[in-house]
Image (cartoon, rainbow, N blue to C red):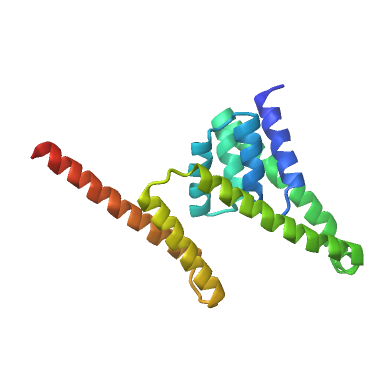
Length: 191
């Protein structure tokens, strides 16, 4: 099968069977694209997750675009992106035609409640996989714990602090430590 067709069909399947948005998709994208198909490495998955979170647009679309580009250049990026978006577009278009009556059906309301629970588990699964495979250097662990504590406090205390601000602060701290370490190495080599 052509890689372009395979990219499209794979991302249609991911888009069709993943509820809860991009964070819920992380675990499934990793399972399929890293573990089963070996299209990208785990390190690339972690890097693109950070980049996809930091750039405009939904994380799932950014992930699909990256994987598609890596395997099939521009046509691959376009087909993977179209594939991940197409199922949601069709489903939302169909539901929007009769949205009010759709949500009043009891079994659908209960199904959505169950889907919410499953989405939470998928997001937790993706986070735990990334944490397990993350290098365990003191600075990285410290940033992870500090970020977790800050985000939890923001949510518990209902503060108005964007996660983007937290990410930027974590990036600046990491860059500062990297710069200091690089400066020390240069000093040791010269001195």
